[in-house]
Length: 410
Image 1 (cartoon, helix red, strand yellow):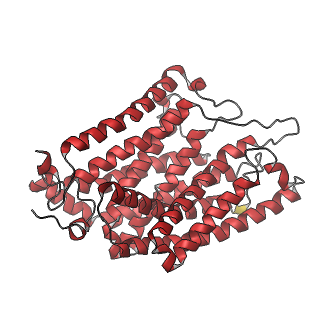
Image 2: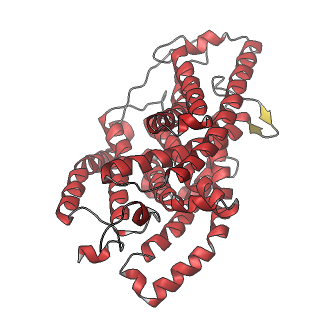
């Protein structure tokens, strides 16, 4: 029965081996579930968060995973709006990764708010003056868009697709995909930007505060650009990891090269603007009478954090822009890891580090270390996402080039 569900013309591991791996991954998933139950049942005092750190590992992970999931909306934009036809061979996987990332973001937020039964307050009692309200609406709506984009893959399962209604419905969804993708781009740009705008408007937190254009701080635009730059590299990275574990070539190098080249150009542009933003911030705090060194005087948040973030981003941009370098597989993977790490570091810096830096003369520096509950629940979406990828890869036609690249006698 299992073999009848596998896409035609491709080979998968035995069902027994598949189930064993699923069972192994359920162990850390259950540990994460225990952590979530502790938070919901005994409140957030189960974590190391306090009045100094109402935002901790969860919010940094949440912002990071949303940026990494940007590959879905941007790859969809390139495929359906810009009409780069070669990207049809990887856009399905970008959608799968996007669904996982945004489901993870919503799941982390459900734990982070401490009282998930009141989560609906965000929508019913919306604070229309808060950027986070717009973020909540856009993330929720975009997750629904991603589910709609994922639905045709489910309907194209070998057994489901035999029936007339799923076949016809999947066809109509494919025809509507440019419109759906356009809606996704609109929603993504707004919530990515607003996530950057939140720390940017905190004038009481000079480490994060930025000047900007009209009502938007520069961080609003930098968060959008960084998501567009790192999202595709995360898609490439997960594709390479999937190829490693499956032992197969799933996407042609030419397709990967197109996505890497575009990501390289965007990363280079982002790094130029990021460096300009950093220099502008240096000047801003000097005018306010605060030495720049005061923001990096306390470990572990020394100058090395800034140097690492910028250095990894520049390294990724150089590798991705220069064709011979990005076509070297180890260097390509290094560039993808560097780019994703730099962006996740940026999200951590703009949230946790911003809260750590004292803003009053009587304030003390307080360091923050997540406990096991925070780590277990933060990593929960990683293991759950791996299970979703395994099931999707086994039963859904995600990679159009797989049969061509891996001939399998029927």
